[in-house]
Image (cartoon, rainbow, N blue to C red; front, side):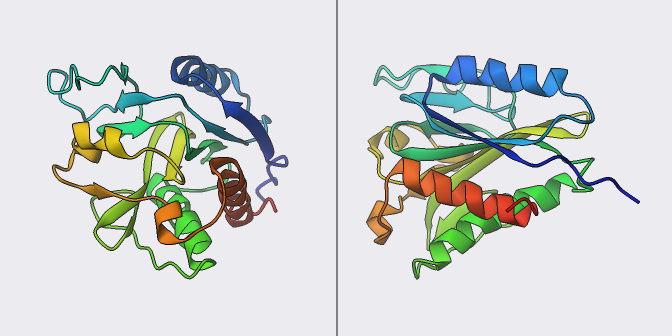
Length: 209
């Protein structure tokens, strides 16, 4: 019989810089043991563009708006993080939970879909374009890195933010992709409160609520 994983740990980190957080995720994942508890990190970042492993190395070198661009090791292409966006980083041992990567991606998407459904907002995922969409606009982006069956990075939900930096890029590599946020969909709450709700929804799906 498969042993039950230790209880999930929720870390509330507030607003933190991207690069130190990336290094902390890498270190946590590299140093964790088979008995290390999974963690969800709820946070926001100051303005930053991040380039995933599928990004063209020469394609996005400057956006002209002074926002830093950081290359990272998650899946996907370019996206924007900034204040007012709820981020939940998912440091989860998929192998221990017998979860396949695609199943986990769908679980992350469904957590956002369920949260929005509680507010009467219909949202969907899209085949071949991970994330969550309301109509033609993307409201949440996700990207993962999996090392030895252990995932990190996670999902970013636009809550109450300045969306104009998205205009300087092709979000997630899709030219002209529209973006939206929960405030514009009539959902009340700050990035902090919505991030807490999203983490709680995901924890329930992982069986840790």
